[in-house]
Amino acid sequence: MSARGTFIVIEGLDRSGKSTQAGIIHKKLAERFGDQRVKLIKFPDRTTPIGKMIDSYLRSQSDLDDQAIHLLFSANRWEVASSILSDLQNGITIVCDRYVYSGVAFSASKGLSFDWCVAPDVGLPSPDVVLFLDISPEAAKLRGGYGEERYEKEEMQRRVRENFKQLGKEQKTTKEESWVEIDAGKGLASVTEDVWTAVEKVMGQQAE
Ligand code: Z5A
Ligand code: MG
View 1: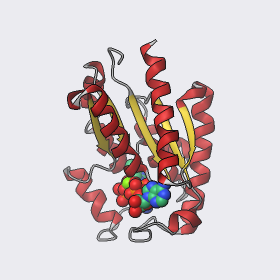
View 2: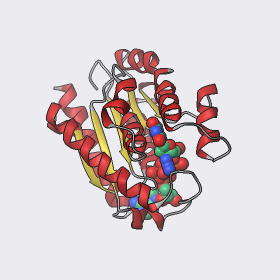
View 3: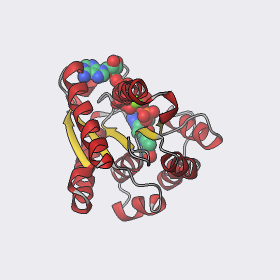
View 4: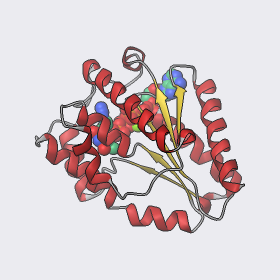
């Protein structure tokens, strides 16, 4: 493993299997490098005071203007920005379940401009790789738990998917290999294999 930890972000549509894959990668890396060398984090982190406001909004227990909830999602990331940086510097690899790309893709699908949505996240730690789990909203809907929260509606998910694709194009212009699209509609074993191949590739490149 390189001296600096690797920052791995998992993104994708709802029910694409992000949390499943983040858990698998975390376990595999911990087995390979030891528990102390890898950390699993997730956004939104619903445990902090800001995260509790987000949770209440997502469960439709409270209402907020689109701009206000967007800024709370970003603040929820800034709460841990310095700890992400120090972990990476200390050689700890971070597996992150959703990040700034979800922030932009979801808020922009409500009509806010891309530029406005990107601005509050500028300066947050940059991932070494984003693994984008792609799935059609129709296939996602067939998986467990879909439809329980505010954004889990097919029409919105379609716009979110387009926004993710746009963000991927932009990300690739800075560094082609930093955005990896994975077909998440396949079976679990097959998706896990594709995800793991991408993880090994980025970690191998960093170690060179
Ligand atoms: N949001 C935002 O607006 N702005 C932001 O800045 C951020 C987030 C960070 C809550 O997120 C909402 O917040 C979300 C975006 C918005 N909006 N919505 N709606 P969350 O991350 O807390 O959501 P979640 O509750 O974790 O659900 P999820 O992310 O949508 O699911 P997932 O993690 O992608 O999927 P999963 O839990 O791993 O798997 C879902 C099911 O599919 C489960 O039964 C698995 O066993 C099954 N599964 C997994 N993989 C497979 C395969 N390959 N085949 C078949 N079945 C599978
Ligand atoms: Mg999840």
